[in-house]
Length: 505
Image (cartoon, rainbow, N blue to C red; front, side, top):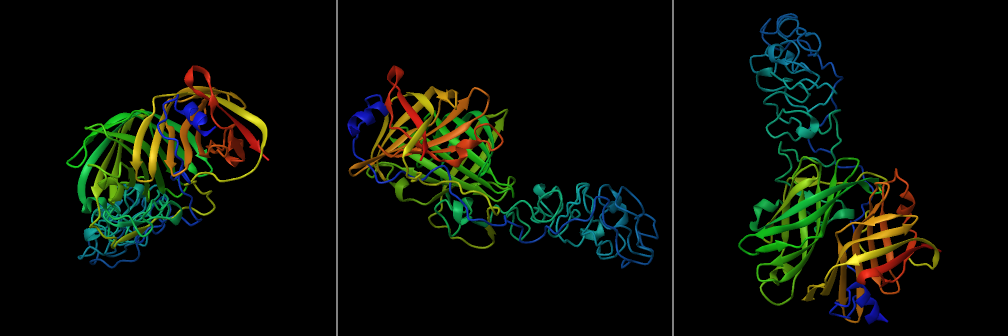
């Protein structure tokens, strides 16, 4: 029974009938609830859109500010209340008002306003800087402190003040962007990421800056399409299809097999989570399975990705099974196509150190699944049926967790409550270890009405249980309850397989 079923999945090409206790990790981890990352320094809420007015004069007598003189009513920052020497409005909110008004004090602090160096159109405060050198604060029309402010906001805060901008986050000032930066004025790229426990990527104690390690190799993924799944129970989801790629470097060279999947999730507080499943083919034809997990405190900070490699336990690439690696992730895509660059660093000698950027999921968000669904029950009524077409099996014998038989999914159709197509991409990443084989299929449904549904169907034969992820605003939201069971794969047309999903009783 087991041998026959596996041959259904692999078109009779499956090379191993051993089985495994459990699949590897799943679509993504779940987080404990939390408030969302906040900035360590900076990010105090901005004043209203018409900018803050300065307090009474501390600058030179009558200085450059004058009484309603040069500090006056430039821009929309509000009239200067410098009187004699207050320097006008320090950091006139939305125009160049601060440029002329905030120079009253000889030391440059004369132009400091209670508005924190001028606020932006949307009140985006960039931190509580001293208003910029020489009191010029508030030159930035979008808010944030002046040119040389101590802790200006970064791009996410819509302000250009500060050397690198660590402070405020969203355009409305205050917290927002979620675990954004350390308090040293950096963008957070050099600090250690402390991930939320629900998406720790195997480094719960902290993900160090990868560039402090040694570059091992680079993986360039070719992105052939980007699919916007929409708002799901876990956040806003996008899927990127991988159509090959290249691997370059001293320790690894080769290519990326077409059919990989890269997932992006943006949470309501700006935190981003990443996941990918790909097959690498080395220049000497060895196969390597890699599942990656990544995180970023916001969309303006370079993500860190922790790749989990499964290579043969003997031979030239066994070091991938035991090494400690972190990659930077840079997406260059226009119109949904382009490249995704992963520069993989050996961080075995890099320690987690300050500054530490805490990443926290927002409160009340459903957990992303990491492992296979282990819900039990009995089959009820049929929901929909898939007819899946398959490619040739890729085998990785004696890998880190066992032997992998990877059966690419190349397309197909669906009928029933979900009617449409199955996209070319993903695979059944079967894992055989001991006497158990775990099926672990990742792929995407494309119903005829334009939506996308992510599927992970996982478990041993006779106990396959799917996870679905669909837009909460669309007609397939009912699948997000994950109250379903799967049939075993049976014989299908053209050498493919047929699978039916059922309500769970």
